[in-house]
Image (cartoon, rainbow, N blue to C red; front, side, top):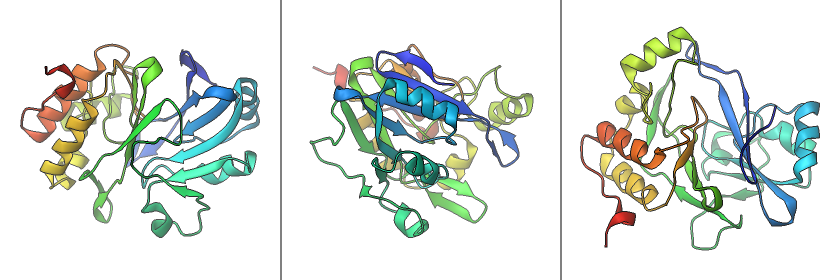
Length: 243
């Protein structure tokens, strides 16, 4: 179930349907010093998954990275009651019944050594009730040069169901590290999104792990920049390459 991606970095996937499309979902596991495990966007917990995680270390942090990826947090908390549940700030109002220990916040000191985080401001998606903020935090694992995204970009390909391929070819996110038509319709504050994307580009990443679609192993930074330039209709500055 767990799949090794790099040193101290794993993923696990499960099926998921959204608006009738098979998009799958993926959680990321990062091992910190002292064999502490950080779980980003948990999937449904199972005995098999718990057994595999316990062989790697101890789950000490469970992260709900945006307002949509929280469904399996309760199950993970039950399996690891001593773990700290972190969530984007607005989730406590959206789901008051959900037990949240800490709201994710900014600042230079990370609660997870070796993992940087950024609030991706201004980004929205189209829900059945209309435009809806994601309030997503994105993460950078410096040791493996990996950017970890949840719903701020997708990357579907031939491995996806045929209907998902068709829809994303038309609406975005097919063989392109980019948002979909749902985000294009819902997102209005493009300046905030541009600022967020340019902050992401300050990180020195090569790989991009997405929650939906395929992992981008090489050229992830260039693909992210290209996808967001198309999404925003403007050029983005990669300040990490400027002198």
